Length: 423
Image 1: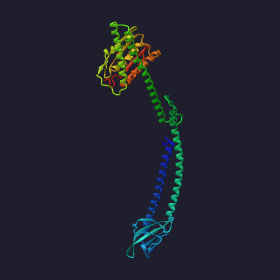
Image 2: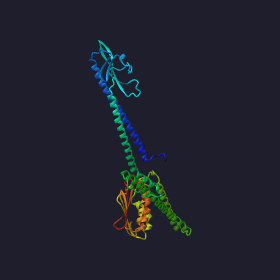
Image 3: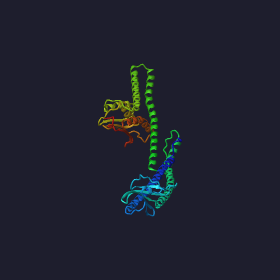
Image 4: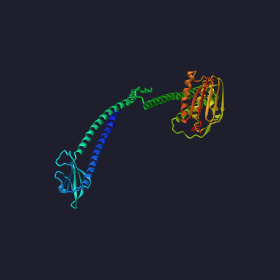
């Protein structure tokens, strides 16, 4: 953790690298520009002097061309103070320094050219020591130094501004990090958006974290409800088995025994169906299922499982199969899903009617019961039974909706039966 740099440290490091690169490039470009300009000017001047030398009647080996330029005819005519090579490129300016000057402040420019003297072509060395070159170079360097100092000052000021901006931008993120660090185990309360320094990215990040926490909270609550529902549904068949075994101990009547055997078989099958369905929800790949239709026979079979709930109630049950959908999903999963909706309708309707409408894309169950808003017990029952139904629907891409209808009861619908897995 100690090796990880803060945003301010990274900003300072990157800014320093960029500033150093800018100063280096700036100085190098100016130095190169001054040198090239000086050399270009000297080349042009000495070319003019070389042309003028060809028009002069040369009588000696040393010809003064102007106050700062002298032409030496022949290599031996050069002063000993000038160390000039014989192998100079003709008509090309070369910069040298005055011999004996340690500081080498005085620049000399030399050009080798050819002139005709008394009918003979000889080498001529034109030497120019105009101090204007040194003066202009010194002035340019002084000006550049001032510019560099000014640039350096601006860079420092810019660095302070950038660090302040970086601090202002990172402070809200640090606040979010502190809020997350301060959370206790199991605390999924939403984060508070900092007042200062709001940005689109910050708002998006905060909302994303809060949404993610909300999803985790919903998942945990769904898991708890799922466990309650699973234990409840599995406990019921066990109670039936225990009750039947207890009754069998007190009777040897064949009809009574056969009736209890049917009850026990049904309870075991129900428990097996629930266990298999619960396990199937954890599998990523569904086993291949032979296509089957959710027709009137299937619905009547589901209704028979919960017939005891409406035997003593004044309820009319109607089934309308508009178009039986062809499904490639386990009978047990569909039976538990739709069975829970039918069970809730039977359990929370005391009188009136319950209608079941099946189409190619949906199953709609409408009742005249207590509805969703009139009875907390009903809400708890619907919610408990819907946990596993919602998980089944979620796995196959279906949608379960519960709404209060005009009669005050509940309309439960499963839609999306033509989605993937149900064609």
